[in-house]
Length: 112
Length: 115
Image (cartoon, rainbow over all chains, first blue to last red; front, side):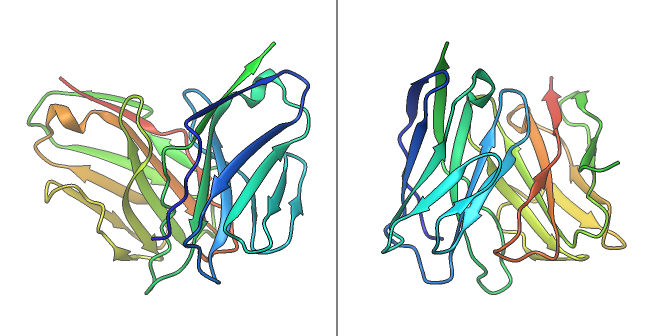
């Protein structure tokens, strides 16, 4: 499986934008870049995904580098509720295997 | 319900007993995943189903672990002769039709404690 690398932790002030980086230098042409987050004592929840173009939804934006070897999840205005572990995942299909492989993620702390 | 449902939400069992954990995926979702998460750790993949078949069982940690899915819907994860190291939160997720361009929806998990 292609691997992703994320910082272990980040801090941000409330109501400011947050940029969460992810490196995936071994990404293949068919890998989709997915982001999930896990709030304390919750199951993971989907945030956003993309292939090549930047993506926006109601939760966040995803900026994908032109060579696709890195991406950045952008929370435009962090709230206390955004404190969570954020996972960057590459999703591909390999001989019918569609598992989502979670790394260690980035623990985001929001400072009031 | 609208989401992935797991039961029980909490289970305490004695070492050596068998346990069954249940997952009800979102209706119509063909892909189903089991993960476990030990305290303070990341998510460990266990098994993936597409319909009733399991093309990937690579994550099952030992032959004490098994899972089945019937009717392309409900799945049961069974742990035989439970050990203390099996204590963890067991998470189930489902995804529509599988594939790279879809999102997965997670349940709230079953917290298993082996005493």
